[in-house]
Length: 384
Image (cartoon, rainbow, N blue to C red; front, side, top):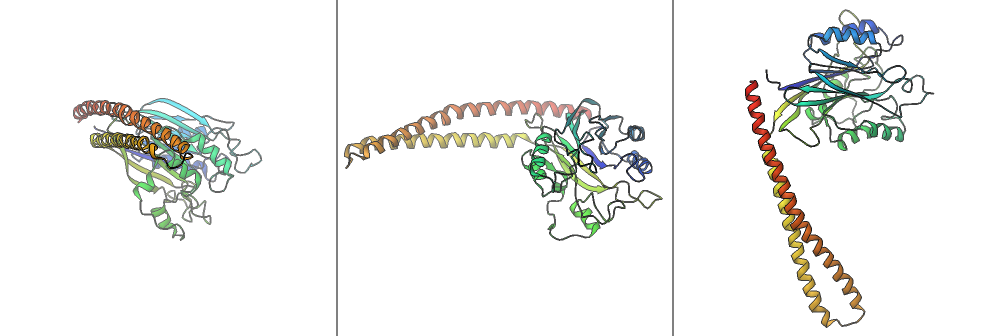
C-alpha cells in the first residue's frame, strides 16, 4: 500500500490526578474514541498519570503500535505521542523559563513543560520528526513579554509536524513568530484562508467550525462561560533543505470530540481535539529550480551592467577632471572616483565570479534532484 497522507490528532486530555473532574471516566472514553479512529499520529497533552497512558496505549495499539511517554520535571511533562510508524529517536527539550513557583494554581513551574519529539521512519517520506508541546499557561496573550520571547526561542527548531496546546490565540506574538520566523504552516489557516472578522463574537458552533476554537467554548461542559479561544494547533513544514520532491500539504482540518461522552452530560476534556489531514504530494521540482537559476543569471547580468556603467562613469570623470572650474572640487571628484572604482570591482566579482559559481552550483542541485526523482518514481512504482 502506498502511503498518501498523514492524519494527525492533537488533544489536551486534562488528566490531572485528584484535580481534573471525571478523569478516569473521560480518559477511558477518549481511549475508546481513539481506538475506533484511523489516525496515523496522535499527540496528547496533560496525560499526567502513567496508568492513563498505559490504558490509552493498549486501546490504540492495533492501529498505533508505537508510542512514547515523556518524563520531565518533578511531576512529568504530561506529553505522549502515538504513531503508526516505527520510532527511531526521541528527545525532550524542557523550557528553561516555565512559570514561577509562586503561581501555584497554574502549576507550570512544578511540572516539566517541554517540547518533546519523536523521529519516525515513514515508508515514503523517510525520517519525519513529530513535536508535541504544551506551553505554560501564562506568557501567551497575557504573560510578560520576556516570557513569551524566551519560550518561543526555546521551541523554534527543525521539525515537520508540531502539534499541541500552545496556550496562545492566533493573533498573539508567539503565534506570529512561529508562523513567520519558523516558516511553519498552520493547518487551520491553510484550510480556512478566508476567516471571518474576529472582532465579532461568533455563535459557539460557528466559532468551532469557522475559527477553530478548541478551548473555553460554551459547548464544553467544563469551560462554559469563558471567552472563546483557539489554543490548539497542528503546524507543519517541509525540510529546511529539501532532499525530496514530496511535499506535505494540509487538505482538511477540523475540530473534533465536540460531543459529550456517551451516556454522560460532560465533555471528553476541557479542550476539544484538533484533527488535520496532511496529503503527501509529488511536486515537480524542476520548474522551481529553473526559476531560481533564471533569477541567478538575471542578477549576474544586472550586476555586470552596473560594472559597465561604472567604467563609463570613470572614463567621464577622468576626461571631465581636466576642465574643473574650481580647485576645491578636486577632493570631491577623488572621493567619488574611489567609490565608483570600488563599486565597479564589487560588481565585477559579484556578477561574473560569484554569478557563475552560483549558477553552476544550482545546476548540480537540479541534476541531483532529477536523479533522485527518477529513483523515487521507480520506488513508488514498485510499491504500487
